[in-house]
Length: 253
Image 1: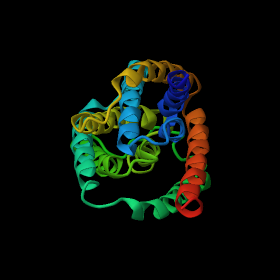
Image 2: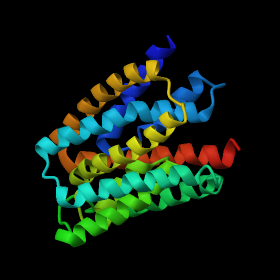
Image 3: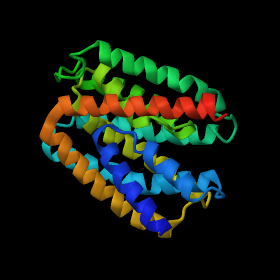
Image 4: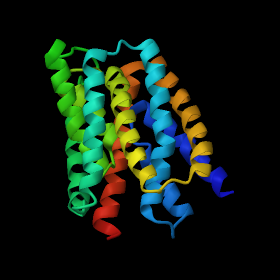
């Protein structure tokens, strides 16, 4: 029964994550609810073990239908991988607790900015090209990759927002690009957790399959309905993240 429930949560997480990020908002609480006495690192490892396959599947789906700037994204993914590893190492030295109270405020600013700019992310007008685009994407990948390894909540949504706001992508291209970078950061964290022995592989296999199924369904929906739909889902997911992180940081604690 436990495997069935977390697999269903993984399917829904993959669906949401493939559109705009935020799958951890669903899967991580589900894992903690089902296994309250388990070491958090193990549950985070299981989450990464499932989600990395979903983000990889979403990347492949988007790449078939959306023009991907590989010259910028591949270096950015490599930098994001390194950043995530560095963040994961840093968290073994410095506690990320100070971010818990700041995160809802940052997300609120992101939401407010998105709502205020009605045309934000509706048109694909990249600000950079060539090496400049690769450099900008790599800076983004390194910074958010470090954050993902160090703390994590909202990583996919931050990737999407910054691709839209800083690089000038529309929401569909931003989501497609974010999936590749998020796959790299998830893989880095997964390797670290596996090295430390914090993976339940018998759970990961079933949850990974469910996550991929959800991811394929979500990606097809995003490709069918375009940037306007992705923008609406982005607003919904960021709003949910604000509520969840506010509760965790200011109410439950």
